[in-house]
Image (cartoon, rainbow, N blue to C red; front, side, top):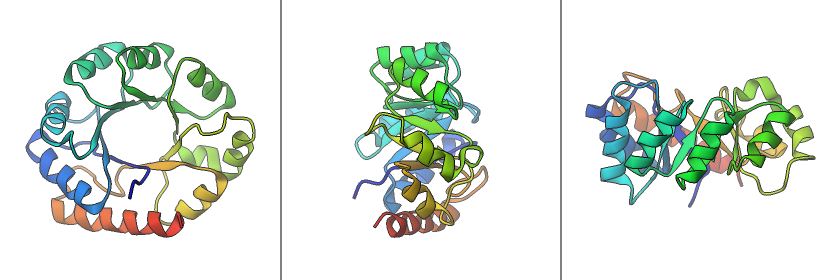
Length: 201
């Protein structure tokens, strides 16, 4: 079963990234991103790509400039997520044949991002948008654009976000926070997957 969940491993280290990612993949989540503000981030992303690209989609998060995009293109990852909409980052990502999920909140940002070629939209922080505003935005956005909610989303509100029209979710500390071991990550990942499946029936 394919789930629209991106596990965000902010703060993960290269010496633990494979074990943590494998634990998450075993739970049924097959999209994993490592944010740029993690230690030795390109080493971790390279390891994920080299060892796990056949099982998961490998992404980078908190990507804010085209220099980062160029390095990630060389590694050969699948998708790039940003906290903001930067036309240069989106254009460079698409030019490199990677999937682009820029961060947006307003209608202007949404339509500008799509105009520049974004494959989907990351609403961040989702709590700032809220379900009611997503319903209003859905009325004017093109159909079938993936809409990912990030920031303040989890088991307690998956259902209300789905009802409002969300496509999927980016989950950070709800799955992993710096210092977590694989046992803790397994427990949290299982809860996220169970809650997502229950809400998405």
